[in-house]
Image 1 (cartoon, rainbow, N blue to C red):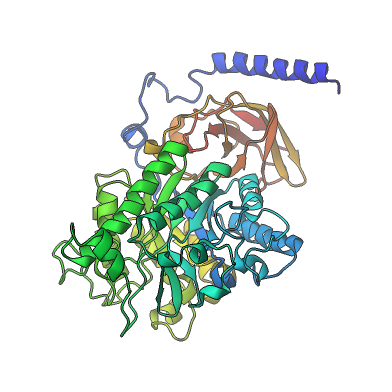
Image 2 (cartoon, one colour; image 1 turned 90 degrees about the vertical axis):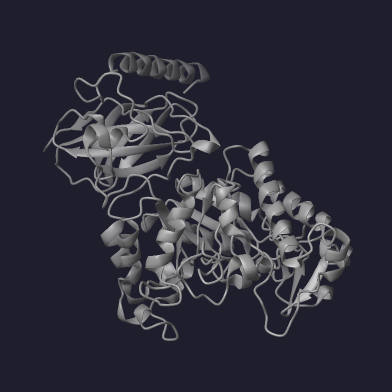
Length: 542
């Protein structure tokens, strides 16, 4: 087709879209409710409460860990094509499991999964730190995730330098060798000293290089800040404390918490300034402080408290709203006396209440069916599914993250089969995050509906450049559709990433041949604000 004909067809489609939009103003509105505002509880006010078993908005994610090759790559030194094939399989499995987000570790030990100008290539890629793997893993991951309409959150470890204690094993140009005064050896590992301002700023700069150069959806930290305590060892930061903190902080522990606070607050501000749509989230150890230590703490008796042991004042980060989401690693079963899931989830729900910080729960797939774990993880294949059922009574919980991908794949005791059957019968949209901006695009136009051997293909016209993805809803028979029918996910059958161009398609793979259906389509921006529905289109029986 000539360029002129392509331009002419595009113009025709846009003109058709405009005409249809102009005639559709009331199609998807409930009768007699013109001018209704649907935010701030509008769904429940006018339509009744959505079905809690079919939430329309829910983060569903898994961690894909690279440190010591936990998940990906499966071992260092694989050829580029094999690494890519492994990652594609992880992403395809995430889609098959009805997930909508992956959290990929891209800076595990102060080395990079992208061509960073500040740090060497990661040792976990090739087995030799600084060796080019032959492709750009982060760039490949972002493209492949987005092609499957998955959000990709890049996971960075801020201060861990090496899983060993020998600086000579680092690449000769590694910043830790250039600045040996930044390093503390502790517990058989190397760490940057969080109390040295230059080390903190460098860490932020290394992370922001990935934010600046890649279309990631989020920046993610796990639970490692100051290292977990090792019996009989002291983290040797006395010289830095005397130089940078003693004059202001008589208690070293307060200075350490201040150092981590600076990292979180500064990085959050710098991400927002650079790319306001990129989210910043943290997944800490789930116990801030035990109630016996602090009346504001949780009803737990955990052996680790992040405030005291890791210098991580996670509760403060939520209250100050320095982060966009928090994923406490509630890695215990319901009824576990020292740290009961059923007590920690309500505690965290209370912490996020009244803030813009979203709460997701970190789930311990790695414990299911493992003989060394608490008997609850062996005797109850539905333990994790029971967690999600419990979460329904706490609306502050907006999703879950599973550790880790290999344990989701292993599916011991069929625990993921059970969870998916009981909670993920329908797709879910990623929750919106108003503080990150964005707005709903204009509604799309369904051009035609074509049944085929692989389901029903819906061709649609993109009417707004802000459209990043679409959501497809299906109803039995031929009918009109009002907005109340879209209040939950009972009719949501597929989502798809928008590509370039005007004419695009999305497929309903679960349609039954010969059935009559009604379809509507909505458009979403990259932060998942949803447009009004398109004009319905029908398939005919037979």
